[in-house]
Length: 381
Image (cartoon, rainbow, N blue to C red; front, side, top):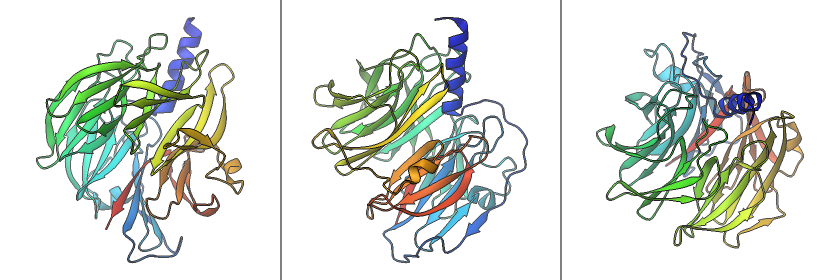
């Protein structure tokens, strides 16, 4: 592979992960409140939905928004209001977010930290420093954070790790080495599954899922799947849905179904799944097949019946709004109403848009977000 193509691939990886190490002194934006966006539900069992915006690379513009289902409102930039003493705001590149108990965890990749906040107020409780951290998941009182290690973009970076965080003491308890540039994770039974990408080395990608026993916190094996893995979600039947981004050239993106009983590939879907969410028996996904040579993407929205492991004809956007979405990015499904939330990253440098669709695929409402709206976390009563 020639140097020019490798350079273009590396550029795309940096854009798609929105990762950069530089932090600049920028003025953080104040909180904004948008009222009567949709009917208020004061007694809703799902109280709200946090949205972390990645923020433009190297601009220190990660931000946190909140959809308040009980009030029918949308709050932008809530971190800055709750933490005025933090002069640089949330930080550089908000990559993931999760709620566990009374705490909200925000993984800020470029700032090498996990922010732990009060889930009700957004007030900072603790900061946990982890170099090049990526994604977070939870099990039995622990948080697990994947991290690339090494400097961002370093082709000679060491293998990545998963850090185990004590959610009571709010500090790293231990860590285990996995594959290069680990991404999303899922817990099934007593095992943690981690998608390894090797994304810093085009032409020499990783192709494995690491399996870590949560009792011993040891990596028990790595199972080969496909190159450049990214998303990894578990269904209720003990199967994993993992995405391969391919090499952006000759090897296409695909979606793989893995049995955790046999650690074998059960099925392959020829879809370039860029993001996937599983709710009950349905997987919601959008596909964006990017070509490094043309610089263009072909976008589609699909659904899979995970019980039957088949693509279905039903779409989760049916009213034509998909034609308005420039760059689909974040994806979530309301656990009770089955509303679908889709974000548009627009041009990656200006505010994005959050769309809410009802269970029939018709738009309910939309609102402007921060830059590059990415990951969601629901808040329960």
